[in-house]
Length: 195
Image 1: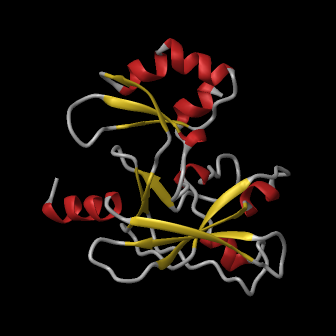
Image 2: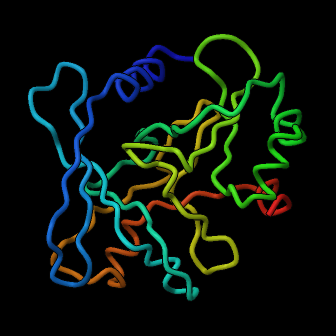
Image 3: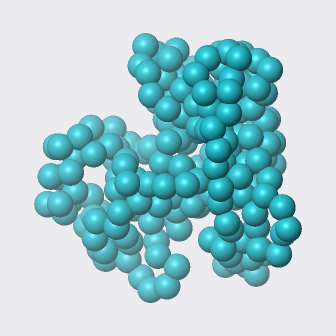
Protein backbone atom coordinates (compact mmCIF):
# COMPACT_ATOMS: atom_id res chain seq x y z
CA UNK A 1 0.00 0.00 0.00
CA UNK A 2 1.36 3.44 -0.89
CA UNK A 3 2.29 6.04 1.72
CA UNK A 4 -0.47 8.32 0.37
CA UNK A 5 -3.16 5.64 0.87
CA UNK A 6 -1.82 4.86 4.36
CA UNK A 7 -2.02 8.58 5.21
CA UNK A 8 -5.65 8.78 3.97
CA UNK A 9 -6.58 5.71 6.06
CA UNK A 10 -4.89 7.18 9.14
CA UNK A 11 -6.65 10.53 8.63
CA UNK A 12 -10.09 8.86 8.61
CA UNK A 13 -9.22 6.45 11.46
CA UNK A 14 -7.95 9.31 13.65
CA UNK A 15 -10.73 11.79 12.89
CA UNK A 16 -12.96 13.27 15.54
CA UNK A 17 -16.69 13.19 14.81
CA UNK A 18 -19.62 15.21 16.08
CA UNK A 19 -23.28 15.47 15.14
CA UNK A 20 -26.39 17.60 15.47
CA UNK A 21 -30.00 17.56 14.31
CA UNK A 22 -31.20 20.37 12.03
CA UNK A 23 -34.60 21.59 10.87
CA UNK A 24 -35.43 20.78 7.26
CA UNK A 25 -38.19 22.73 5.49
CA UNK A 26 -38.87 19.86 3.07
CA UNK A 27 -39.56 17.07 5.56
CA UNK A 28 -38.32 15.50 8.76
CA UNK A 29 -35.38 16.79 10.74
CA UNK A 30 -31.97 15.78 9.41
CA UNK A 31 -28.92 14.59 11.27
CA UNK A 32 -25.64 16.31 10.28
CA UNK A 33 -22.30 14.62 10.93
CA UNK A 34 -19.19 16.79 11.28
CA UNK A 35 -15.55 15.70 10.97
CA UNK A 36 -12.31 17.17 12.26
CA UNK A 37 -9.23 15.51 10.81
CA UNK A 38 -5.88 15.24 12.57
CA UNK A 39 -4.26 18.66 12.99
CA UNK A 40 -7.41 20.56 11.93
CA UNK A 41 -8.83 23.27 14.18
CA UNK A 42 -12.49 23.22 13.09
CA UNK A 43 -15.12 20.61 12.43
CA UNK A 44 -16.49 20.55 8.87
CA UNK A 45 -19.90 19.33 7.65
CA UNK A 46 -19.26 15.83 6.32
CA UNK A 47 -22.39 13.65 6.08
CA UNK A 48 -26.17 13.87 6.41
CA UNK A 49 -28.45 11.13 7.77
CA UNK A 50 -31.92 11.49 6.23
CA UNK A 51 -34.70 9.37 4.76
CA UNK A 52 -33.32 7.52 1.75
CA UNK A 53 -34.59 8.91 -1.56
CA UNK A 54 -33.51 5.62 -3.19
CA UNK A 55 -35.63 3.53 -0.83
CA UNK A 56 -38.63 5.86 -1.14
CA UNK A 57 -38.43 5.40 -4.93
CA UNK A 58 -38.97 1.64 -4.48
CA UNK A 59 -41.70 1.97 -1.85
CA UNK A 60 -39.54 1.41 1.24
CA UNK A 61 -38.91 3.84 4.07
CA UNK A 62 -35.64 3.86 5.97
CA UNK A 63 -32.60 6.06 6.45
CA UNK A 64 -29.85 6.80 3.97
CA UNK A 65 -26.52 8.60 4.07
CA UNK A 66 -25.77 11.72 2.02
CA UNK A 67 -22.72 13.89 1.37
CA UNK A 68 -22.87 17.14 3.38
CA UNK A 69 -20.02 18.43 1.20
CA UNK A 70 -18.83 17.37 -2.22
CA UNK A 71 -16.43 14.44 -2.37
CA UNK A 72 -13.87 13.87 -5.13
CA UNK A 73 -13.35 10.57 -6.90
CA UNK A 74 -11.14 8.34 -4.75
CA UNK A 75 -11.69 10.33 -1.55
CA UNK A 76 -12.21 8.36 1.66
CA UNK A 77 -15.41 9.32 3.44
CA UNK A 78 -15.60 7.19 6.56
CA UNK A 79 -15.02 3.77 8.06
CA UNK A 80 -17.57 0.99 8.55
CA UNK A 81 -17.99 0.14 12.21
CA UNK A 82 -20.18 -1.91 14.50
CA UNK A 83 -19.88 -5.01 16.67
CA UNK A 84 -17.14 -7.44 15.65
CA UNK A 85 -18.92 -10.81 15.43
CA UNK A 86 -15.77 -12.85 14.86
CA UNK A 87 -12.39 -13.14 13.17
CA UNK A 88 -11.95 -15.62 10.30
CA UNK A 89 -9.15 -16.72 8.02
CA UNK A 90 -11.10 -15.72 4.88
CA UNK A 91 -14.25 -13.98 3.69
CA UNK A 92 -15.68 -17.34 2.58
CA UNK A 93 -15.15 -18.81 6.05
CA UNK A 94 -16.86 -15.77 7.60
CA UNK A 95 -19.89 -16.06 5.28
CA UNK A 96 -20.21 -19.81 5.96
CA UNK A 97 -19.82 -19.48 9.76
CA UNK A 98 -22.76 -20.66 11.89
CA UNK A 99 -22.88 -17.26 13.61
CA UNK A 100 -23.24 -15.50 10.25
CA UNK A 101 -26.03 -17.86 9.20
CA UNK A 102 -27.81 -17.35 12.56
CA UNK A 103 -27.56 -13.57 12.27
CA UNK A 104 -28.79 -13.61 8.66
CA UNK A 105 -31.80 -15.78 9.63
CA UNK A 106 -32.62 -13.30 12.42
CA UNK A 107 -32.65 -10.43 9.89
CA UNK A 108 -29.21 -8.89 10.50
CA UNK A 109 -28.67 -7.27 7.10
CA UNK A 110 -25.61 -5.10 7.86
CA UNK A 111 -22.95 -7.83 8.00
CA UNK A 112 -19.66 -6.86 6.36
CA UNK A 113 -16.23 -8.47 6.24
CA UNK A 114 -13.24 -6.16 6.61
CA UNK A 115 -9.53 -6.77 6.66
CA UNK A 116 -8.16 -5.61 10.04
CA UNK A 117 -5.31 -3.05 9.97
CA UNK A 118 -2.84 -5.53 11.46
CA UNK A 119 -2.70 -9.25 10.83
CA UNK A 120 -4.34 -11.51 8.31
CA UNK A 121 -7.84 -12.78 7.83
CA UNK A 122 -11.07 -10.80 8.08
CA UNK A 123 -13.33 -9.48 10.81
CA UNK A 124 -17.08 -9.95 10.41
CA UNK A 125 -18.76 -6.73 11.56
CA UNK A 126 -22.45 -6.31 12.35
CA UNK A 127 -23.12 -2.73 11.27
CA UNK A 128 -26.55 -2.67 12.93
CA UNK A 129 -24.52 -1.66 16.00
CA UNK A 130 -22.68 1.00 13.96
CA UNK A 131 -22.09 4.51 15.20
CA UNK A 132 -20.89 7.81 13.81
CA UNK A 133 -20.06 8.37 10.88
CA UNK A 134 -22.95 5.93 10.08
CA UNK A 135 -21.40 4.30 6.99
CA UNK A 136 -23.70 1.32 7.67
CA UNK A 137 -26.62 3.48 6.45
CA UNK A 138 -25.44 3.40 2.83
CA UNK A 139 -27.99 1.63 0.65
CA UNK A 140 -27.56 -0.58 -2.41
CA UNK A 141 -29.21 0.51 -5.69
CA UNK A 142 -29.64 -3.19 -6.62
CA UNK A 143 -32.45 -3.62 -9.20
CA UNK A 144 -32.96 0.13 -9.66
CA UNK A 145 -31.77 2.48 -12.39
CA UNK A 146 -29.20 3.98 -10.03
CA UNK A 147 -25.57 2.85 -9.77
CA UNK A 148 -23.21 2.87 -6.78
CA UNK A 149 -21.21 6.08 -6.32
CA UNK A 150 -19.10 4.62 -3.48
CA UNK A 151 -17.48 1.35 -2.52
CA UNK A 152 -16.30 -0.28 0.66
CA UNK A 153 -12.60 -1.06 0.45
CA UNK A 154 -11.37 -4.40 1.82
CA UNK A 155 -10.28 -2.51 4.97
CA UNK A 156 -13.82 -1.16 5.52
CA UNK A 157 -13.29 2.41 4.27
CA UNK A 158 -16.05 4.10 2.28
CA UNK A 159 -14.49 5.55 -0.89
CA UNK A 160 -16.08 7.77 -3.56
CA UNK A 161 -16.10 6.15 -7.02
CA UNK A 162 -16.78 9.49 -8.72
CA UNK A 163 -17.48 13.09 -7.75
CA UNK A 164 -20.45 13.31 -5.37
CA UNK A 165 -22.25 16.66 -4.94
CA UNK A 166 -23.22 18.07 -1.55
CA UNK A 167 -26.74 17.69 -0.17
CA UNK A 168 -28.72 20.95 -0.53
CA UNK A 169 -30.92 21.90 2.44
CA UNK A 170 -32.88 24.25 0.18
CA UNK A 171 -34.16 21.41 -2.02
CA UNK A 172 -36.47 18.46 -1.31
CA UNK A 173 -35.05 14.96 -0.82
CA UNK A 174 -36.30 13.74 -4.18
CA UNK A 175 -34.64 16.63 -6.05
CA UNK A 176 -32.12 15.33 -8.62
CA UNK A 177 -29.17 17.04 -6.91
CA UNK A 178 -30.04 15.54 -3.53
CA UNK A 179 -30.61 12.10 -5.08
CA UNK A 180 -27.07 12.29 -6.52
CA UNK A 181 -25.75 13.25 -3.05
CA UNK A 182 -27.01 9.98 -1.54
CA UNK A 183 -24.11 7.59 -0.91
CA UNK A 184 -24.80 4.22 -2.55
CA UNK A 185 -22.72 1.03 -2.48
CA UNK A 186 -23.07 -2.44 -3.94
CA UNK A 187 -23.63 -5.00 -1.20
CA UNK A 188 -22.33 -7.69 -3.56
CA UNK A 189 -23.84 -10.89 -4.86
CA UNK A 190 -23.00 -12.74 -1.62
CA UNK A 191 -25.36 -10.42 0.24
CA UNK A 192 -28.24 -10.97 -2.16
CA UNK A 193 -27.71 -14.74 -2.06
CA UNK A 194 -27.71 -14.65 1.75
CA UNK A 195 -30.84 -12.49 1.91
